Length: 181
Image (cartoon, rainbow, N blue to C red; front, side, top):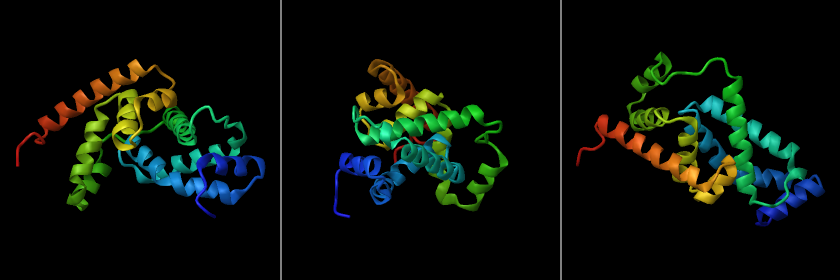
């Protein structure tokens, strides 16, 4: 399939039930959506994969509801955001960052230490701060798109970003990341 823009692929998937067109959208967005979930789940790969799959299933089932008021990526991130929070509301057990599983993973592979420290820093944030930071710093979304994805005012997003960055900076400094090398 030649390089078509997102709106053309969405139209093909919605109107013609073209699975190849939707598959192209999955290929384009599976890595960013999975990365978003990895940061939200603090590195839980299995859960991230499950949530990403749920996101694309919901997007496929609701593709005819895409109105084009926002970009396809914004619409998809909004679905991902809702899938994640539905999952956390329905979850009875969440892995604490200090559990034996994380300690075991850290001991097995010292290359993951920095990643685990970032996840630990992300764990100090509330859900809104973590989502705003993930979308801005790791997914490159501008504030207006984050506001649209999360359904909040741009000023509120800026407040969450400010507080989140401050908390992460303090946590990382307290854990030795302020040293000059």
